[in-house]
Every structure is written in C-alpha cells, then in structure tokens.
Image (cartoon, rainbow, N blue to C red; front, side):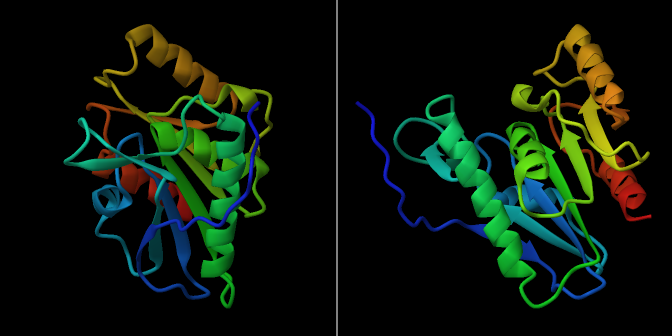
Length: 209
C-alpha cells in the first residue's frame, strides 16, 4: 500500500532584474525537458521594469539514457495530484519570498508547453495574485475546463505556431476555439514549438498597457 511523507525539498529558479514597487514580475514556466537557465534566455533582453523569474520543475532527469544533458519536468501521470499541490505550493512560496518586502506593480505568468498546465493551475488555485496568464503552445488542463477566468479583454493570451508538430491542423483550430471561448486573445504565428520573440514582445506590451 502506497504511503506518503512530506519532506523539505530545495527548488531552483533564475532571476534577471531587481524588484521595485514599479516592477512587473514575469514568471516563465519552461516546457518538458528544459532548464530555466537556458529557457529564460529566450525572453531577453527586457526593459528594466520587467523582472524575469524562471522557476524550475521539481523533477530533473537525463534527457538521453543515464548521462549527458539534463532537463526538468513539472510532473508525470504518476502521483500527479501530489505534484500539482507541490508545484503550486512552491510557486506561492517563491513569490512570497521575492515580494516579502516590496509589492510589485503587476504579475504576469507565461507557461510554455508542459509548463502551461502548471501556470493555469497556479492562476486558478494558488494564493498569488496573477494579473495576466499567457498560455504558449500549451493545452489547457482538463481539470480546469470549467474554471472561469476574468472576462476583461487583453487579460489572458494563447499563442501557437502554425508549424507546431505537437498540434495537427484540426487540433490547432479546436485549441484556439477553446481558448477563444474562455476569452483568451489568440496569437497565431509562423513557426514551430518555440517562443517567437516578436509575438512575445507584442503580447507582453499588451499585458503591460
């Protein structure tokens, strides 16, 4: 019979910039098999006002075999409910630590690919106030399909490349329609399963305005 025990674990994150009262915190949650050190570079450079925070998924593993390059994951299908709770608790504690002395102007969370599900769950169930959610090439988590998000325009965004190998043409249309029904602004671009810097800058500008 499976039992559980809670222990303290050390989590990592990458930070670019210093937080002030005028700061916009931009949390970027990486995809499967990525590391925040490298994923965060896709968003640089940013204005001095934007502080970039890239948390790392709790599970690190070798990408090929038993040695070589390492990546991280937010969860698997095994004991996923525990991982969901641990992810949200980690992100809430991270934000609390970063903003203990200074409350920032705004918080924006971008979830790429697998990180999108964690981003959406943090927005829906966490203790942190998230002003804008950006789902990038990410499937909306099924357990939140009935979740109601704010109806204000330009609050939340979904971006996807027209050559993304993880989405067929039909899946692409269905996914965009789903997000549109939840009042997400849709951004389709020419590209693959990656961050398009020009589109990202456009979305970020919309969130800040």
